[in-house]
Length: 188
Image 1 (cartoon, helix red, strand yellow):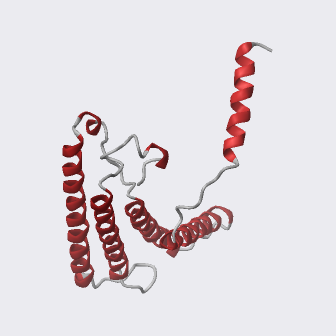
Image 2 (spheres, one colour):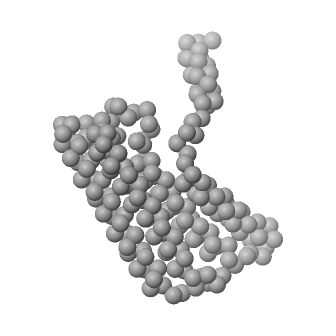
Image 3 (cartoon, helix red, strand yellow):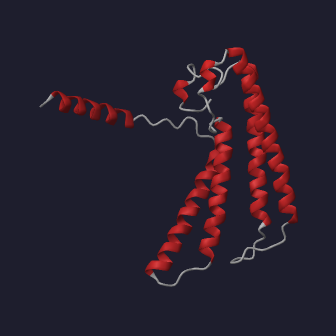
């Protein structure tokens, strides 16, 4: 075998060894509703596909329910991302800014996130209160979806508050000290 083939073989063996080490320690009880909603969404989409293309008689409610379940997956996943503090951030400039300025920037970002999530919670509660329509295919008020989104924004607000307190107490975060948090794969 050539040198390249030997290196590829070694890389393949190392990759297979790394696959055995799956770490689920960051899974919380808050994450289980996301898993449940995702599997209900998968079932509804499969049911829609099966009835439309196999039975040639589509169920009318599956498309609308799948749309609202996708919204629920999105916002429930955002709660999980807020809990892990893993929403996207531009980290490039932080490497060239002095550490005290990074701490101030982290605090400002945390306050902006809290204000945004709290403001969106307030707005979605108002929107849900003003919505009186029912879903088209089933007789469930659309406001239920908006209230769920409001609950998710409230959860994001809570986790943003907890992360802010953690950043203040510890004096560090993924943005303040990116080299110290490299092993966390984008979350602190």
